[in-house]
Length: 316
Image (cartoon, rainbow, N blue to C red; front, top):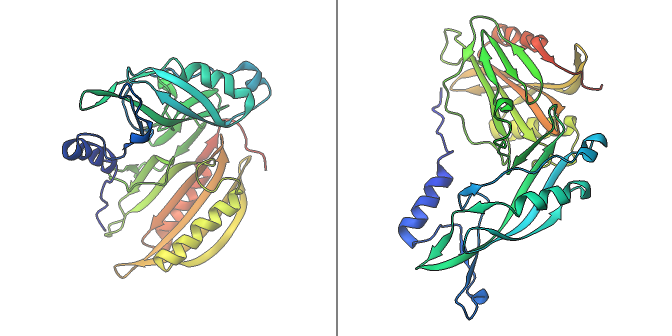
């Protein structure tokens, strides 16, 4: 198998090197034109810097919960040289969530930043995700709020069953499967791994299932689940010379409506049988991606789909 390289450290590494080489983060652009007579500097900065000292997520408005409103709120934020938020304005998002978002963000504080002893004001954006759940949850820049540590999206794997309270589902695997020690590759913006499971097949390629959550608001917004799956399969055909065995189509497991597409491709002379199964949940696409070195292993892996159980049915 190819060794997968963990690229999750690339961003903080570049950030650290930016300080070492230039004396200021590599993704900060100092706007000299905005320097005032008091020598106040302002820099445009990404959402990952500076470090937040106090960052309590906003409350989910009860009227929004009652009206079943969820979504993404993006705010333009100015952080003062003292680390306190000076200005916050909603750029986009449901109006019913705007007041709560601004009220919370204006209380946040960050590590103050300086350039050659001069304080720097930071011009950045903050993204808040309001998800109805259950439970109703607000995340900051795709990070879970400290207020809900027990509802971590990553879930848990105990006695052959993966459980995720955030998305409200369980997934049971046969006893010979185990949680993978794989260091995964980087996913598109906002997406993250929920679970990776392996089964030793006695061959160089393992039987593997990878479960991913991908926010609809970040990647292919407005697309249907079938369109999302179709785009993924087209990418496999283009990038891995894959052969489509089953076109994207819907099927029902229990009371839940999924979409599935199967394909196969060749890796180091071995045919890899693969499939992606996905469903929409809590404004995310949840996907189960399977890869097996034989048709028999593939069929056994695909049978585990029957063991996906949601707390609440997904409408057909």
